[in-house]
Length: 101
Image (cartoon, rainbow, N blue to C red):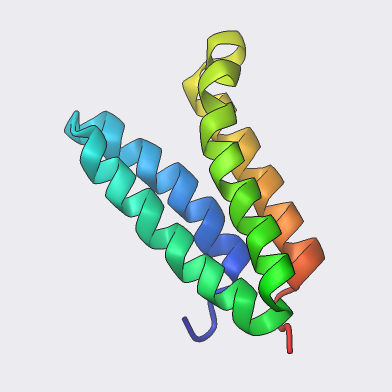
């Protein structure tokens, strides 16, 4: 993942997972993209900031995915996905930073 921040990977996983699921009409493909990006980001969070930070950020990633569903009913699908993606990216940046250890 040289040169790509975990913040970008996590946000991209949320946005990309939704986009893939929506445009292919295959939720499992979107879920696969979401899981793959989450795994890559979690490994980087662990490497840069340790187990507690990686666990907290991974929990935030999963919570963002889950939370985007009820939020979408209030504000629409794309605004919800973009909002939770930005929140996860900001949390990742705050905890793990771009350059890390």
